[in-house]
Image 1 (tube, one colour):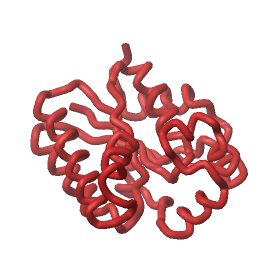
Image 2 (image 1 turned 135 degrees about the vertical axis):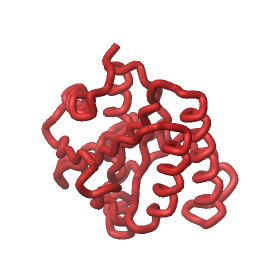
Image 3 (image 1 turned 120 degrees about the horizontal axis):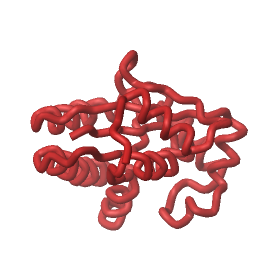
Length: 179
């Protein structure tokens, strides 16, 4: 299985890009808020029990996908360094342990674009950050600017790029099969 991990700060376009990449490749999308919302229904964010539950579900899902030899899967999450490093290592072991490969992509955009995107109406549907104030608070609290694997991570400034163009760049860079 090829696991494409798209990470970046809230509001940079991870899910939009993942959906565009899924349309190109036929890979399914396992996005952050599927597990975030589940964990938040039980525990407050960002408490240790919340993090443990979200990570447990994410790892079990990714390992199951690799074990069942899905051709590919796209996973989005807001990687924060160094807090998420242990989870990333467990994710790599879970996928590679079943013969899978990982491809890391970090999306980022300029501040003005970022603040405009965070206000998009479709973000409310998933209970995502929807105010500039909340975005600035998250950016001050966590380091979303780091690449998961420096030197191996494809980093894309999507400030002026449409999601389809970003998806094509990802597919080309990692030689992903197209539909």
